[in-house]
Length: 492
Image 1 (cartoon, rainbow, N blue to C red):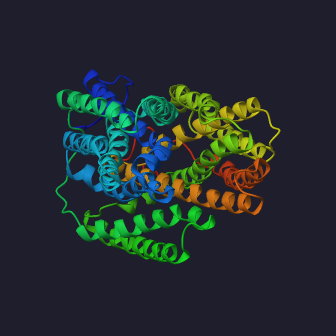
Image 2 (image 1 turned 180 degrees about the vertical axis):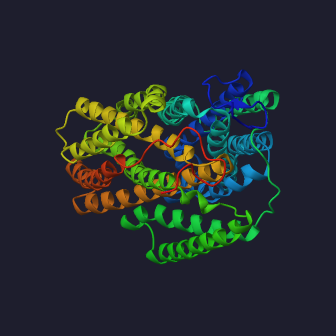
Image 3 (image 1 turned 90 degrees about the horizontal axis):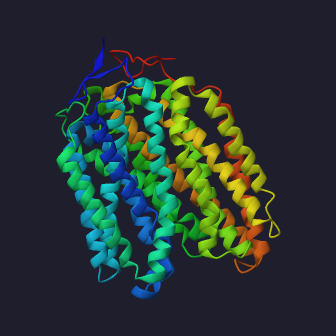
């Protein structure tokens, strides 16, 4: 009977039973990831309060979220190397220590600069947790149970963003913005204490030297790219100059090209910061293209929907949050069910209806107007979330399962990077188009202008989602037993 060496307890690849000790590791990581994502989604509601309390402009206040996103974009590509170089315990405790320190700094912030530094420190820890979770899960869980476990990851990814705005709205209505960090901090410290007690090391470590030049190129490449994308909306609204944006975009493109070239050179000696040999797997590459397109459409649409609900339909912030809440809950709660279907039937039975449902809902969104019933939007948003749930869980699982254990950490880093860049691009493009059309028709105070801008952005999302229907027919579930050598179980 063959087994995968995990660094703790060997897991049989012919049984779906997972040792209790390894399940404890997974649950600790899930709890930590939930806290980190919850924190990430609470700050957007707090920006108006920051403007009043810290006496800053909206453009400056937006850096609370922009700096977080930039830091994530820079740190995530390095996690593939870090997870190879350091133990699971070291990475987990280091990530939560950074996150907790940033949370404490934010709660005590006496001005905007201190808050900005705190958010950067928080993001540094957050960027490590999701790749760590997915890499550990792939090492500990036998192939026939990975879909089910990845479904639990979907609960974290979906429920935390659903709860975040609601929680922050309640806290902001009754306390100051600092309460958000005060509530999150003890939860993070508790997760760190549990991890200290129960977490065991997973996988094998390497002693590859850290390539500082790759980190610098990564910072310029991914940082410049995400920053330029985040400023497109401000440029469309006349609140940013095109010169800095053009410079940042050029720096990002050149830095990214140099970073990729550097990794190709270093991976020949197994010293790459982000090993690009993961793309030698056809299944992994196809899954990443599909995930990029879905993230592009999803994050952009998710940004526009609340604006449509509030500015075109006249809903309050709380009411708008309640409209999107059922979809987020459905997306999370369906995760384990979808995971079991993946384990039993593979990808196509999920991806094909998922991509069709996502595309169809976004095309329906192109018909929304100021007279559309809120209940219709609620049903449509729920259907969209179900379509995305049918897509993301099998993509996460199939992409990593197409790699051998040596490359799990690099694959997890690529997934995080793809989502970060695609999300930034989707938000940037759709916000720019939305802003241009709304301003041309009277501004956000005119409901019909907001509806017109929303419809146009939904066309972009619908076209992108339609492309994923093609990918749904060609992405497959890899063989349960990976090859002993090489990157993927099958090369095509």
